[in-house]
Image (cartoon, rainbow, N blue to C red; front, side, top):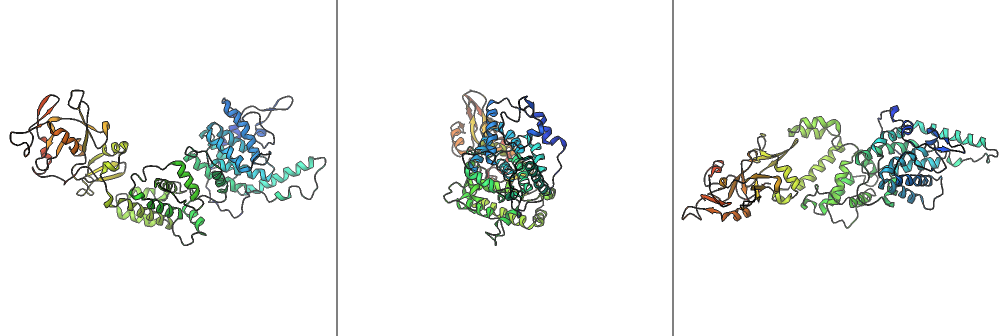
Length: 557
């Protein structure tokens, strides 16, 4: 694919690589020693980093892995095939696919592959070959990054080719090499048309800018996720993306420019609204863990490919797939939805609603529109009519332990009447209201009255990770509502409710005063072969004997 003069890329503010990131310096420390000729003369680093039409006999980078050694030699031939420097038995896209699969599958090959591409795009006097070499680098960066130890060196190499002024120098240098080669020939070709069709040159800076962006993103996100290898459709998409940027990883302004021709009247990104509608159309607002449970990564990748072609395939059944892709789109925006320069202001005003609204109004227009749409979209998932029992909705044990281990009384000065408890998560505050008590004992662990070890009461679905010692004498049956309570940690309210099923299981162990079995409070509890007198010490936590504190039911919401 030839470079287009109309391609527009964002401005870059880049540091100049230090001498330590110079690729020749790195090569002198990590390259194998290569020799040539009858007397096996040592090949200089400069020559090893210059384009070659000949195959290599061993890897460029030192390695003890036999598999990598063999693959490195083969992959160099494939690179030559893709660049047109060697005859290929198949078409160019299939060659690129084979290269991408090898690099994606074998991490030890990645640095070798990128150093080979650097070599074949250095001192290369064939225009088509040079552009195909940079094109192949862009394709590879769409699927996997170099290792961290080689990242800065590859970054330095790409940096040196990003200045558009260098395109003229590169093209002139190629012409000089061609003229020198012609002069060395004893019988030069006809003067009228030596490589005349190639004199337009190659916009190497365009490829380099794209590769730079992909390198930075790949360093953060890593290699392509999932179990499925790269496929031909993805290779084609990666090649075209050089001059037809993806909606993923671009800025909001760029996304709006991309869709201007198709959707001139849209004020919001098509990808945002379309995926949001798909989530709702698949009843995502009624799906448990819709933004917590990830969709199948291979299906998400396949949908991403379709979306970048302005298409939402019919037949989607799992709302987690578009939900995961929607999250990915927000996450991969080139600049965060709330730009970095607003960060300190957001942190300062996180407790002041009016100031927070002013921050939103001060955002760039497109950021403000997208953020307001996102907020309204998420509000659909907070409809009070769809609130369910907290522990029933969130069955993830790790989440429950995290949430309830941070539960405490709400002494923040905010919403204390409506939400008497809160769970802290860094700066985030999860306000909690409940029908009775936030701590609900669900399971009895340990000896269970048989003397087989210490007894523990587990609460809120946390199994052995959320427990308090079971104290038979501290059980308290409320005379007004008939519920059973047990002490819990002080910060969570000191009193926890014993769930109905467990209370019924324990009910046969209570003793009452004669004639008060159905109307009075129990006086003793039989446990582990002993008769324990009940202290009723929890009565002081209830406002009035014979009344309940917070209504009916079990659990928090």
